Image 1 (cartoon, rainbow, N blue to C red):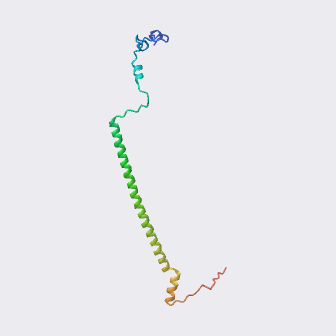
Image 2 (spheres, one colour; image 1 turned 90 degrees about the vertical axis):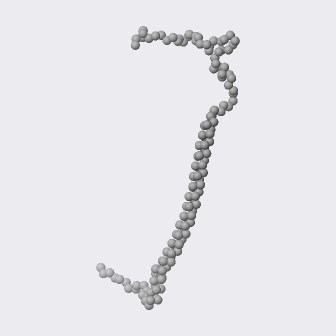
Image 3 (cartoon, helix red, strand yellow; image 1 turned 135 degrees about the vertical axis):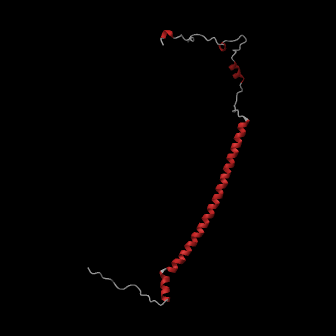
Length: 136
Protein backbone atom coordinates (compact mmCIF):
# COMPACT_ATOMS: atom_id res chain seq x y z
CA UNK A 1 0.00 0.00 0.00
CA UNK A 2 1.11 3.46 -0.71
CA UNK A 3 1.23 6.05 1.98
CA UNK A 4 -1.08 8.50 0.21
CA UNK A 5 -3.94 5.96 0.08
CA UNK A 6 -3.93 5.33 3.87
CA UNK A 7 -6.66 7.14 5.75
CA UNK A 8 -5.63 9.40 8.56
CA UNK A 9 -6.37 8.28 12.12
CA UNK A 10 -9.34 10.07 13.60
CA UNK A 11 -7.92 10.14 17.08
CA UNK A 12 -5.23 12.66 17.79
CA UNK A 13 -3.12 13.18 20.87
CA UNK A 14 -4.19 16.71 21.69
CA UNK A 15 -7.87 16.43 20.85
CA UNK A 16 -10.21 16.42 23.85
CA UNK A 17 -12.58 13.49 24.22
CA UNK A 18 -16.25 14.13 23.72
CA UNK A 19 -17.34 11.16 25.77
CA UNK A 20 -20.13 11.54 28.26
CA UNK A 21 -17.99 10.17 31.08
CA UNK A 22 -15.73 13.22 30.88
CA UNK A 23 -18.57 15.71 30.98
CA UNK A 24 -19.96 16.96 34.24
CA UNK A 25 -23.72 17.18 34.41
CA UNK A 26 -25.59 20.10 35.82
CA UNK A 27 -26.44 18.43 39.13
CA UNK A 28 -22.77 17.51 39.77
CA UNK A 29 -22.85 13.88 38.84
CA UNK A 30 -20.61 12.65 36.09
CA UNK A 31 -23.18 10.22 34.72
CA UNK A 32 -20.68 7.36 34.73
CA UNK A 33 -22.37 4.25 36.09
CA UNK A 34 -19.11 2.65 37.04
CA UNK A 35 -18.16 5.37 39.47
CA UNK A 36 -21.60 5.24 41.09
CA UNK A 37 -21.40 1.43 41.56
CA UNK A 38 -17.91 1.55 42.99
CA UNK A 39 -18.91 4.18 45.53
CA UNK A 40 -21.74 1.92 46.78
CA UNK A 41 -19.44 -1.10 47.39
CA UNK A 42 -19.02 -2.22 50.96
CA UNK A 43 -15.52 -2.07 52.29
CA UNK A 44 -14.17 -5.08 54.20
CA UNK A 45 -13.26 -8.68 53.58
CA UNK A 46 -15.06 -10.12 50.62
CA UNK A 47 -15.53 -13.89 50.60
CA UNK A 48 -15.65 -15.70 47.29
CA UNK A 49 -19.19 -16.53 46.32
CA UNK A 50 -19.70 -20.29 46.38
CA UNK A 51 -22.86 -21.81 45.09
CA UNK A 52 -24.58 -24.33 47.37
CA UNK A 53 -24.25 -27.20 44.91
CA UNK A 54 -20.47 -26.71 44.84
CA UNK A 55 -20.32 -26.85 48.63
CA UNK A 56 -22.45 -30.02 48.68
CA UNK A 57 -20.31 -31.72 46.00
CA UNK A 58 -17.14 -30.71 47.86
CA UNK A 59 -18.49 -32.10 51.15
CA UNK A 60 -19.46 -35.38 49.48
CA UNK A 61 -16.04 -35.67 47.82
CA UNK A 62 -14.31 -34.94 51.12
CA UNK A 63 -16.47 -37.56 52.85
CA UNK A 64 -15.64 -40.18 50.22
CA UNK A 65 -11.92 -39.43 50.54
CA UNK A 66 -12.20 -39.71 54.34
CA UNK A 67 -13.92 -43.09 54.09
CA UNK A 68 -11.26 -44.34 51.67
CA UNK A 69 -8.52 -43.18 54.04
CA UNK A 70 -10.11 -44.92 57.03
CA UNK A 71 -10.52 -48.10 54.99
CA UNK A 72 -6.82 -47.91 54.10
CA UNK A 73 -5.84 -47.44 57.75
CA UNK A 74 -7.89 -50.44 58.92
CA UNK A 75 -6.53 -52.63 56.12
CA UNK A 76 -2.98 -51.63 57.08
CA UNK A 77 -3.62 -52.51 60.73
CA UNK A 78 -5.00 -55.93 59.70
CA UNK A 79 -1.88 -56.58 57.59
CA UNK A 80 0.33 -55.57 60.50
CA UNK A 81 -1.45 -58.09 62.74
CA UNK A 82 -0.93 -60.83 60.16
CA UNK A 83 2.75 -59.94 59.76
CA UNK A 84 3.30 -60.04 63.53
CA UNK A 85 1.55 -63.41 63.75
CA UNK A 86 3.63 -64.87 60.91
CA UNK A 87 6.83 -63.49 62.45
CA UNK A 88 6.03 -65.15 65.78
CA UNK A 89 5.29 -68.43 64.01
CA UNK A 90 8.53 -68.19 62.02
CA UNK A 91 10.55 -67.59 65.20
CA UNK A 92 8.89 -70.60 66.87
CA UNK A 93 9.64 -72.87 63.90
CA UNK A 94 13.22 -71.59 63.67
CA UNK A 95 13.76 -72.36 67.37
CA UNK A 96 12.35 -75.88 66.88
CA UNK A 97 14.64 -76.41 63.88
CA UNK A 98 17.67 -75.31 65.88
CA UNK A 99 16.76 -77.72 68.70
CA UNK A 100 16.28 -80.64 66.29
CA UNK A 101 19.54 -79.81 64.53
CA UNK A 102 21.39 -79.86 67.87
CA UNK A 103 19.88 -83.24 68.74
CA UNK A 104 20.83 -84.60 65.29
CA UNK A 105 24.39 -83.27 65.55
CA UNK A 106 24.75 -84.95 68.94
CA UNK A 107 23.52 -88.24 67.45
CA UNK A 108 26.04 -88.26 64.61
CA UNK A 109 28.84 -86.38 66.37
CA UNK A 110 32.25 -87.97 67.12
CA UNK A 111 31.53 -88.49 70.83
CA UNK A 112 28.42 -90.52 70.12
CA UNK A 113 30.20 -92.53 67.43
CA UNK A 114 33.08 -93.42 69.79
CA UNK A 115 30.60 -94.36 72.50
CA UNK A 116 28.66 -96.65 70.14
CA UNK A 117 31.93 -98.19 68.90
CA UNK A 118 33.04 -99.01 72.46
CA UNK A 119 29.63 -100.56 73.21
CA UNK A 120 30.01 -102.69 70.09
CA UNK A 121 33.43 -103.95 71.28
CA UNK A 122 35.79 -101.85 69.21
CA UNK A 123 39.05 -100.66 70.76
CA UNK A 124 40.15 -97.09 70.39
CA UNK A 125 43.33 -97.00 68.35
CA UNK A 126 44.33 -93.60 69.71
CA UNK A 127 46.20 -91.08 67.66
CA UNK A 128 48.24 -92.30 64.77
CA UNK A 129 51.82 -92.65 66.05
CA UNK A 130 53.31 -93.70 62.82
CA UNK A 131 54.96 -91.00 60.79
CA UNK A 132 54.92 -91.33 57.06
CA UNK A 133 58.21 -90.56 55.44
CA UNK A 134 58.39 -89.59 51.82
CA UNK A 135 61.59 -90.37 49.87
CA UNK A 136 62.96 -87.70 47.64
